[in-house]
Amino acid sequence: MQHAAMLDRFLRNLAPKGVTLSTFGTAHVETFFADVDTRCAPGTTTRLRYASMPERLCRQLIDDGIREENPVTAFARFRALARG
Image 1 (cartoon, rainbow, N blue to C red):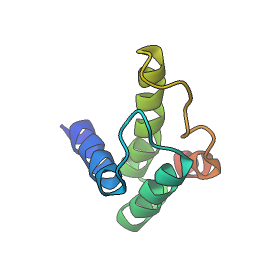
Image 2: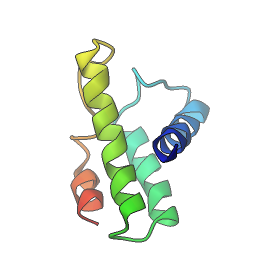
Image 3: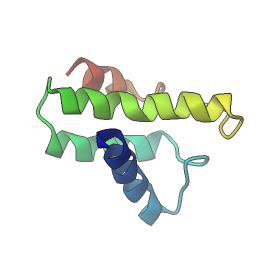
Image 4: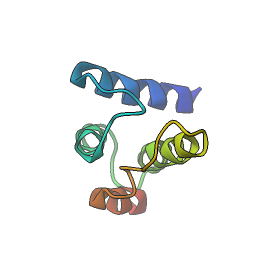
């Protein structure tokens, strides 16, 4: 249930920008994580889940042939968020 809500928040973040799961880029990841920063305290389990969810999602989309690259791993703040 929590992961579904987190994915929904990610999709709601992308929708107004006119991008989809197959077309979002690093700038979109940055705005999503900026929003996460306002909602989750550093080092919390929720923040760690938010940090890893888009990266895992992109890996799956690449495996399924929907994406060719993972903009999350290119995002420098990903590592900082994952560490808390």
